Length: 325
Image (cartoon, rainbow, N blue to C red; front, side, top):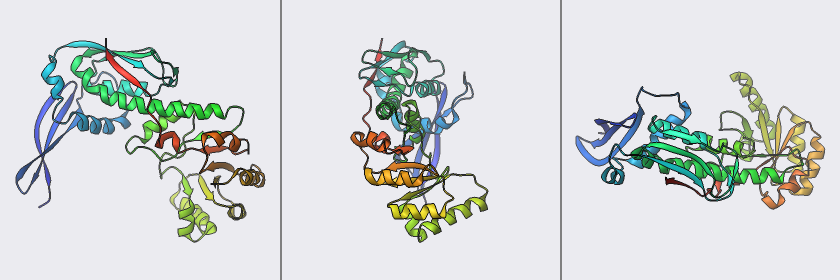
């Protein structure tokens, strides 16, 4: 008999319901248990619906069967104020998301904002203050900081790349190399840093990479099948294809019917030649092996975009703290 979930007890927590779920197997209750968080109908303002499943999982993961430190040491009705303080120079991101975190957990928390998303900040800057029940301040602190530190780190690195490209027409793109469950937040941070979002997922653009081309039996087959698929499904999606050599580039241009060509792991000389041959007929994107030190050199080859996985996959979080006032 497979494992099943049995509904345990319901408890009110701030302005949402905490539902305990107990794992059981063949009629025996197991020790593992979890909780999920469901908003009550009494909400002061509407929320971003895309954040609700993420916040449910995140709070369940963090609070588990209760924040016993807070529950044991702080009176339930204690009130207080905390302040978000910048400890490292960078670009702040996630302010609006933080407000959603507070509102989701406890709509009666009051946020006073001083600095907007996308602003450049320095140590000592105060981004916002939050007033309300101390229990709510303490239990939202870590999730809010995890989100803001991560998003601010991404926005900070992105802004650095964007500034390096000033004076060229080249834009910096992100990739799908994101943290599972946080893609939309991380891509939002890229935009706050001044970058451009590539496709969000596998559903909003066709990108024929080397493996697709090889499995399809070649460039011509891959492009024609993509075109036929879009026509049959009635979908209006852009088609991008990756090329690994000038010879592959010529084959793509002979077939046509794509919107963007990705120049994968091309050196500078070959990139310049590729851009010359394309001559503005298609959007161009450089990708692979490009570092911050070579970024501008690739931009000066004339490509429209440079995709940088490092914006999200290995970024350092910005140092931020949330301190009681």
